Amino acid sequence: MATKEKWVELFEQVIGRKPSADEFLEGKRFDFDPRKIISIAAPAGQSNDGPAEEKQSSVTHEQNLGQEEPAVEFLKEESVEAYPKEEKQEISESDQYQEQRENWLQAFETNIGRKPTKEEFLEARNQGFLNLPIRSELLESELPQKAIKKAEKRMSKKKVMLIAFPLILLSVLVAAFLYLSSVTGVKVVTDDFAKAVTKKDYDGIANLLSSNSDKWTRADARALVEHLESQEINIETELDNIAKSKGKSAYIDDNQNKLLGVTEKSKKFGIFQEYQIVAYPVEVKVNTNLENASIKAGDKKSILLNKNAETNIGKYHFIKQEFTLKGKTEVGEIESKIQLDLATAKNNEIKLDLKSEKKRLKVTMPAEASNATDLKIVVNGKEIGSSLETDIQVVPHQELEVYAKFIVAGNTFVTNKESIVVKGDTLDVALSLPKEVTDKIKEKDEEAKKVEANKAKITNFLSEYRTAVFRSVSNRSNYYAQYYDTSSPAYKEMVEWTTGGGVKKAKIDYYDPGALDIREVREENGSYIVTTYEDYTVHYIDSTPNSVNRKNKTYYLKPTGNSFAIYNIEVSES
Image (cartoon, helix red, strand yellow):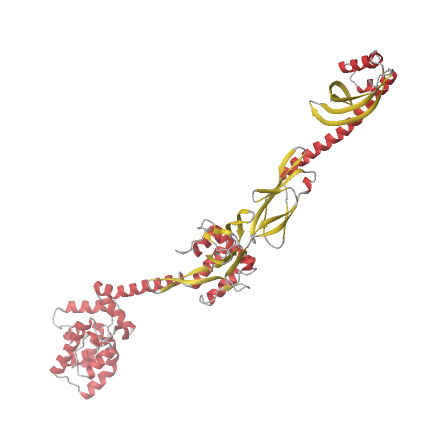
């Protein structure tokens, strides 16, 4: 047999490492027989029987995988110090002790599914390998990381799945928790609202404000944003303050109106609290002296109002909106639009005092209508007269639609419709004109000015013409040729009358001029048709009494240079 030093050397050459304390004792039991090295070096708890090649390949396979078992690592470290002690003390181990050790190792592998660690082996050895291990004695979370990794490599796929499934489930739950936390909470809804306001996304704002019991439209959302902006506040900052307070605060204006905040909605999966942005409503109360009065907002149902008493008509969105008021006054039925005046709201309440009373309406016409005639003032579809100042029966906050109809140069025009809300003692409204009306009036004005200029020119022309005719009658001569189209029949008739014996035969001495009234001048096909009324006194050369001739005449004139030429005259008795 080999010496123990030689046996240890051979063991290291064959196995690739030094023997453990147990392997050393086992080798000693076999008188350090080199042939027993491979069987002794088999994994603890395995049978030493069987072909040497199998055992050798098992050890080699474990070494190639880097799976040095914890107990073996410990025994490797212990072997250096164990040899001298065991040599000096001649340690011997009884067959009973060896059997208990083998049984403990086998029970550990069977129950735990792996080989023991250094600490586990030492603890068992100190107890004489009397307490057989069961699974509940060990918690894998308390084992060294290296041991756990080695145990995991030995686990079956089923065991791996059993361990991995809870970990995967835990990861999913954590991810779900983080996701749900990111889509719920006060900060989420305030940020969403702030983004929608910045982008002017009124559909998005309406969606954020709407609930099962309160629906918001795009127009409502826009009106709310406009009102908030009219407060000259930074909406994003106010929303941020609400988020910092965890939804406990709200935006309140100078009149103590609560306008914007958040409210609890529901809980996702009963855990994650959801919130909704909320625009607080305004409560409206109405007092009126109208008979059979009613009021309604938009397409909602009409609400009957108590006469000379306050009626609470409910809560409405805190936005500019229109109410329709119907009732009866001493001057008849009234139906008018009432604007909700948000400036009068205090503590989210508005009181409308809708009592009928007379107010003075003052209308200012546009400058372009300074020459207007036949003026008519229209209020809410009814003509109230032609005066620019008049008293009308109205109620506070009533909306009036005012416009005027008038005539310029024979054409009827209508102003723009202007809306005012009844406030104060007087109602001032300045009317304006559409551009096309302004252009048309200017065109008609130019035409009228041209007509007036022509009328004046024609009046002067006919006045001079009549003077020339009267002079020709007195002198039996022709002083009027320059006023005629000398090729016309009218000229020839006048010549025959004045110089051809007509005047002489009629025994006319002279004409004494009377009225010359230019009644109409119109332009037609490049000529002017002038209608006049004329009268004059005829004096005779004999004892015939003087007579007054009254004539309606129509002159047909054609322009000639800077003057005119008469080419026809129609005469009728007046």
